[in-house]
Image (cartoon, rainbow, N blue to C red):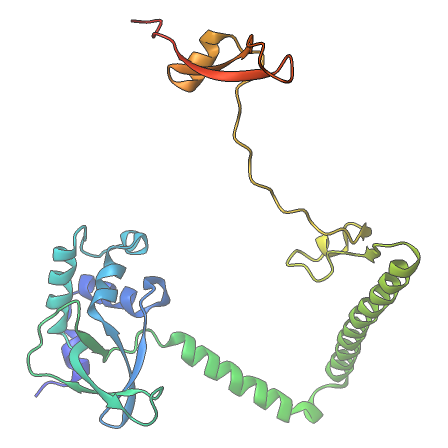
Length: 276
């Protein structure tokens, strides 16, 4: 019986490229953690894989089959199951509490479906893991063998550590000084002044110290834009265009029974369309 690695080695290069994309962070797939035969494994939902194959990130991958519809994506994912990169599973109860990983079991019917779950049997590229492990071993050996270093290297490390501690102390000292200065200016020159106001902002190193100082004025919120109104002195033709065939005209009230002379009322007059 062929092993998992032997089955995966038989996969065409295009299929392997598709699987590597799905397994990488570029796909944006939601990865869940489950327990298969007492071992922690990663699994995903079929709908998430289909969405990844239809994303713009997949369109940029070279040497992969073109996918434009969900039907094509499902067919491609179905054809990849035979190489044992992933297998369909059923989810069971949690291994412990409600937030613990769920038990997953491989099902005999390996048919792709968007509402089904699939466990990863492919670990992906491991060169970053190997490189990180080698780097950790090298750093540990270097630290253990520090007494055997040449005097010049040990002196250089000492100077470097002192410089880093001094830089860190200067940063904290500047933060304390600017806070004290702000408290003083709040009392004598309200609303207060911040020196180096961009010190803790998400900007570059140089931009953190520009400008030198700034008043502590709260930023105004953008108000709602007012609706444009027709100018008061617009002629009837302009009012007709603005109001869709009707405008309001103010006329003097000529009735002598009004208690206040010169009062004005408004009436709505329909004006025929000029183009008709």
